[in-house]
Image (cartoon, rainbow, N blue to C red):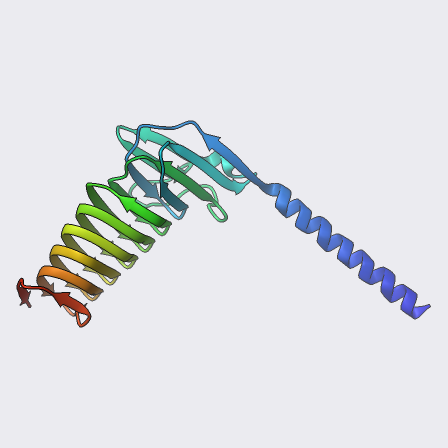
Length: 237
């Protein structure tokens, strides 16, 4: 009798867990936004954006059903703005809970990402463009796997992280203000110039022709694995 009772209790608990899991799955929603004509992204707050270069425009929002209507996506000029309803451009906060919200974006051309807040932006496939501006203001994360361009400019203000696993560019600039971290690996690139102000870290590796750096503060510039061709290395502290 006792074994039967335990079996019934276990079955009841399993059924309850399964119902709870099903409800959670059903609570997730997906929505296609009809937006186009952008080549930049501005991300506000703590949302996650995953970008991929493609032949066409697409913006897909995946979020809990209760907050998907609060995920705002709009085009201003050539820029796609992504934020939660009630977010403040200065405080980088949203009224709605952004946990579990991911926005998937594709476009033919992409020349800039500006993240303000604690969100995450990532591009895991090759991005081929003429110019790219990467700007992070806050404690968020920006990650690119592979970039080919004429010029790339990285600006980090705050405690966030920018990670570029591979980049091939004629000219690159890195400007870090604060306690954040920037990591970049260059593949047969041209001129690189970096400026570090504060207590952050800049780590550069790979192969470049010319390198110039300026350090103002207690931060560290790591270039031990940066190979410089026939050009020059200029370091100012």
